[in-house]
Amino acid sequence: MTFDVHQLDVFVLVGAVVTLAAILAVRVSAGVGLPSLLIYLLIGVVLGEGGPFGIPFDDAQLAHALGFGALAVILAEGGLTTDWRQVRPSIRLGLSLATVGIAVSVAVVAVATHYLLGLPWELAVLLGAICSPTDAAAVFSVLRALPLPKRLTGALEAESGLNDAPTVVLVGIISTGAVGEAGLAETAGIIAFELSVGGLVGVVCGVAGAWLMRRVALPSSGLYPLAVLCLAFTAYGVSSALHASGFAAIYVAALILGNSELPHRVATRSFAEGVAWLAQIGLFVMLGLLLSPSRIDLDTVVQALVTGLVLTLVARPLSVLVSSIAQPMAPRDLAFISWAGLRGAVPIVLATIPLSEGVDGADDLFDIVFVMVVVYTLLTGPTLPWVARRLRVARRSEPRGLDVEAAPLDRVDADLLQVSIAPTSKMHGVEVGELRLPPGASVSLVIRSGDVLVPELRTVLRHGDDLVVVTPRKLREATEARMRQVSANGRLAQWLGDPSRRERD
Figure (cartoon, rainbow, N blue to C red):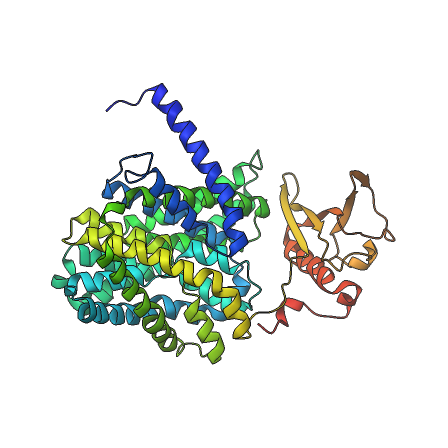
């Protein structure tokens, strides 16, 4: 089949219209507390062969490949935008949920669906493995909008970033029939190998990439976000070439890069968010296209509801309880984590693996997973704020008061920081001299309402000001830390220590 310029024109038009509709859907979904993936899936179903547009799409192998590519982009964005200081206190629980918790959940769902629904053991274990992981896109988009303590968001974000890797391995082994030959112990060893080597590759690529980006002055600021994203995908490619987990590698590498002192860090994160949104839109629309609504019958709906009930009310709470042995938490925290196990594109993408391998019953499995994800996302997503209040784990929102953007100065070993004073910052009313920046760092310019001021020590800072700060590269971290202290505490920062170390969460 040839692809000429006229077909390209039609493709561009349809793609632009669908993408704009999906972007507008973000606003609608945010208003009701739903992950926007549901609207994206609906768009795909409407465009598909069962909808009025009738676009045929049944290539499971292509969906599998594109789905993995989109998940890699989403995980890269998740790592780049995750604050390690928030994740670190809960990393043990997050890692336990992504490994031990997955194993418990798979076992519970497999046993329940085998005896309750009469599924063969192979399909029952596949269904358990496919449904158990939480979805990074859903978790990042929903939970970051809730005023939750860092111990909870950290655990859930770490889990969603790491649990794709073991489940991809498990579903792949089962779908190819290798699990019967390998045995349980060897399968566990393969998963451990892929996770550990993938994580190690991610660490190496992340650390080396951060070192390189700090020392290479690129001719355009727009190249920095591209370079950082390519470094993360380098980790994915190297890990995959070593037959390890590319998902673990790309998340770890992006996490290190996102928390390193890189030039144009804010712009990099914004670029990654935009690319991840595009990946999510394309992924969910494609998965909606893959669904054949004519195959959905009452039996499929009943099986999906039963599977979701077992997963939500039995498997998830039990997996959280067992995982908490690694890092005990209060019962109300564990209850919220149990309810906040959001599913999304990941289970549906995993369901394309047995489809592409031609497993008997894979079509029915895909339909069950699709219906279950839609129904239980509608149930859990909008109720999360109410559950957080009822369990008394919600807290008053704490908006960010300071944004810092950085660019290297080529001829000297220094960085140029652009600091924006947000309306919530306590830097308002503070004099430049009261900032008490490290020796060698200074506020060079203050931009206020479009006017450029050369500040004096007695110049008073205001909300909405943009500061241009020059700092030696070796003092950049200390300079940023000092400005954040003043932003959080005002003039009192000269007597208080780093507030980030004193946070309860």
